[in-house]
Length: 404
Ligand code: LLP
Image (cartoon, rainbow, N blue to C red; front, side, top):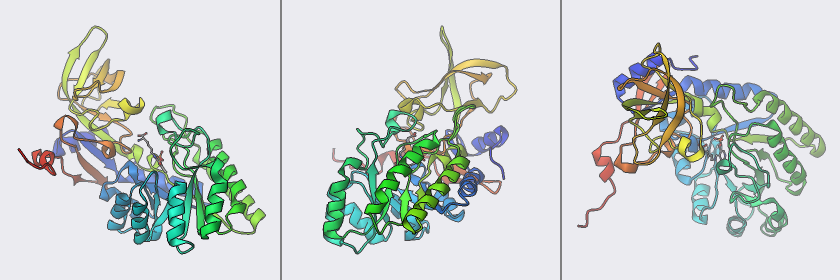
């Protein structure tokens, strides 16, 4: 299994398909999924790929082929999942802030649903009573995650039903005899510490007795991957053991088996993806040399939106002398990919690879500045295939209506 694509291969793919270009390595996705499976081999756990991180249908098909289930954050993502062949029972829809009609639509698809507001829970109860099992998304008031923008479990977060409203939940469940099959808590993205997940498990432990029909406890996503060389990561092996203990304790207490669910996004696809850009211009300034590339925040917004660090390498001059550059985009905004990076000598026309671009890269891209969205390529079994065409001018006009 080839876990990292070589500079040489990436350059040859960039020469074939042009830049800017997203390249994904299917083997890496498989390897990450197998890591999870082996870490949780002794606990009754299911994994649902959080497809908001990357929804190209070929990636979804690959996820399906390796035996992973799928988590969706909109009903359209659920339609995509079903379109590529996921069975409804393997599709989970964790909603937030949605109109009740979207829940009705999801229910019509026969998929698993987590409801995240008292208002929708009440509407659900009134209309469906006990007829359709659902999960409840809770907000535990726990601060976790890499930065505030990707923290979802704290006491000022819009996500989930605040835990202090559990009495209201129980009242609705009682009144409408709602079939609560699961509880869900996602506290954030890039959670380094296993203890955060175990705090969530403790919250569940106390709630379980109130929901006699419970089958699963969903701890969301958020496993941290390495963006920097010495990054501290979620210790999946330790988490697997802790979850095994937790499920064992629950079983002993309630004489009933429960299942844990997780919804990893970044863990599965972040490291599989590369954004390849060409250097348009070099500009020498008093403090740095700018390497201006033919992509920008329209294609990868994470460095600008979250101050996220993405490793960058000059893949077309790997023997060049190491020099310092600030890598900037071509959008009419300050779109810096990396400040004072040590790269092999950069020449105009070189290809730079931006690493860890699989998750929330293409997926958060836009046509800002009327620039085209990039093409996407998947490397599978040693073969590179185009899985999305680069935009062309007609894509900028699509859906616009001429009235003048
Ligand atoms: N489950 C739920 C309910 C979520 O809201 C998310 C992410 C996940 C699972 C997957 O989290 P992951 O395993 O990927 O950390 N655009 C941001 C991340 C936003 C995450 C949104 N929710 C970024 O690029 O860092």
